[in-house]
Image 1 (cartoon, rainbow, N blue to C red):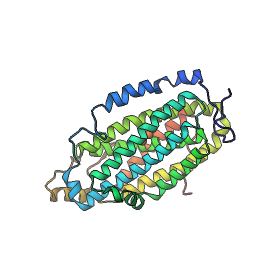
Image 2 (cartoon, protein in one colour):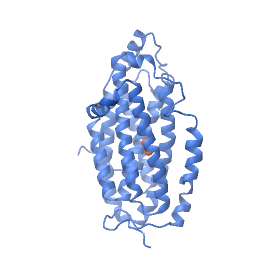
Image 3 (cartoon, rainbow, N blue to C red):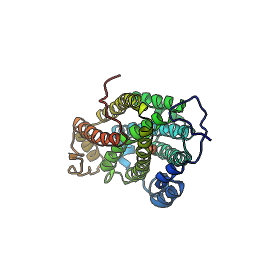
Image 4 (cartoon, rainbow, N blue to C red):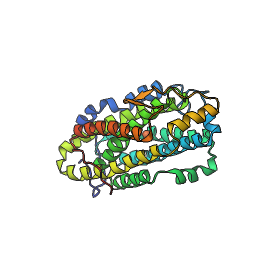
Length: 316
Ligand SMILES: [Fe+2]
Ligand SMILES: [Fe+2]
């Protein structure tokens, strides 16, 4: 049997075990996934957190703080729904069996992420009947556009573009946002921090697969480089625009501290740092600059590893 050529839609995916690829991806097999995730860092969790943990009361009582938590969580649900649709679609676009099996584990990871972040929306007081309206209302249009672009590639069974869009751009960039959210919530909201730490561990595996598998495919198909670089430029714009807009919304750090004090809550220590920025007192602009710096530094390294040259995004 012949391998389907990655990135073409003319042929149905006639697949076979490619032993060289399977060997190369051995750290990404189902057995490793079972041992490290469900039987490892997720063991004993309930919707991603320690049973009994609760959202802080103040998030449920203070409208502005609740609103900010809802907006953030909605973007997580929208991003994870996109990753679920993409990873499941990519199973049928993958040119080898080992990649299909990895993407099957990723599909379950993404379905879990959709579930745990949706569960958080319910914990923050969203009623099940209003879930879709809340998502519609608060979803960032840039993130929605990103999802449309990515799912177009997946629908065309363009494996290379789909994996670059999902495992390198979406997950590579979101990874730093998850880490920043984790640092900001580690003391103030252990429940949310726990949900995030399991997600970060999953995403690290997804990004690793993307770098490994796509690196080898780009070397085999250098003719794909120009259109992948164009795609990176366009997709990165929508991701960065989403992060910037989300950070600029909601109460300032001073307002958050004042609101917490009103409810008799102690604010997290201002000296808590993330990449040199004091999370408790940084302005949205400072946070945005630190996030962009971190994202772009790590993103450029990832692109380099897969043989793609970073293209600065411009407004499409
Ligand atoms: Fe995810
Ligand atoms: Fe993921």
